[in-house]
Image 1 (spheres, helix red, strand yellow):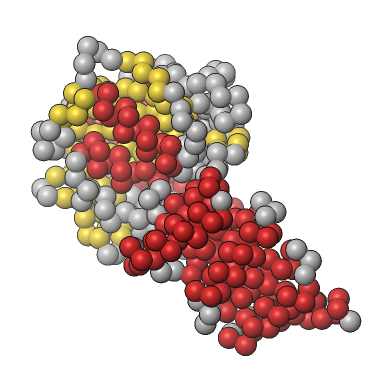
Image 2 (cartoon, rainbow, N blue to C red):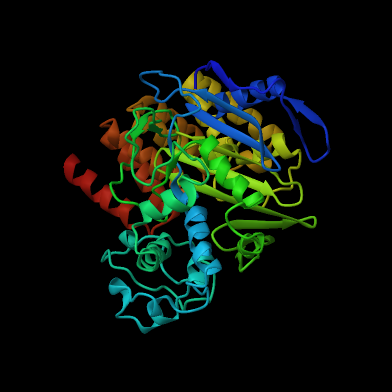
Length: 471
């Protein structure tokens, strides 16, 4: 990302953000830190709010709506919130729980039978608690199944498996119990009482919206839903969403005891990290006698994240218009909480400091010679991170995708010298030569790959095709 102009829009005299060590960080310093992070991570736009108790102590935005027009964002620029919709859906469900109209452990089919899954008797086991804790047994999305039909992957309640489909079922139940569409439910229970004036459950009619980008800041466009989706159709701003977080910190429209139920661990989410769990609609980390509630959002071209400490009543929410938006989670937590142990076991998204991103940016911005220098230095100084044959390999494919076949061949050749016992590096080199129409060298490298691993059918097929062409 090119150096971006920092746009400061909301300063109440002077902001001081207190870290867990009580060391103050002034807003000017934080602005510069964030700008450097965004430049390193290739993120076009970033909007953030930091909370202390239920107060906004920092609200800032950086960058542009899209990489072509370069139009700057402002505090009212709308982003796709993606899965940050789920905590709000959970909040609406808990409003019914508080009224005694929804029981967390009553099977949902007793409220509404779900046509797409009624063929499976296990569907009668699914409860609101299971949906909200992602233990329903549903896949994330049915579209990933070969037949595109909804199914149940395991006995409901058995284990954690993240599912948007579960929230769609719960949406149908909420609409049945409220006798209203989900969009109206959100408007009446969340947006209006919390004065969230730039929030929508369908695509915003406003012209002030960010556009999604891939990891190289190429435009990806936007998802423009015409119907509300309980799992991910929220479009909002950081400032608006922070008002919802304030309601979770110090509720005004729901009893605190109900909110506390949302924060109770229901299921461990990662086998190798007992601190990470899922509550009711929010992810949790129990660390050093503190509970942090958090969630991420991930739509094509958009990433978002929030985390709040219950003990300190402090946290932050940010939105980005980039596939790289979650690559800065670790750094933002370190900057704002001054505690690198928070979320250290959550490795769902590679961070921008990962060698792959460093090498990719080096090649993209400085060329192939700088790439090799950076790679060699990395193997010397950080061998445990850089001693991986796939690092250069993926950069080679990146070069091929950009039709830089000479660079791709040079990168794969270098990698073959580094890892001469790997069938994969020779296969990749064969592909690069094939793309550049050098059939003899393509054949030579495919055959080297086949000698090392004779069981790869694609290699055999490619060799056969090339031999037929050469005859």
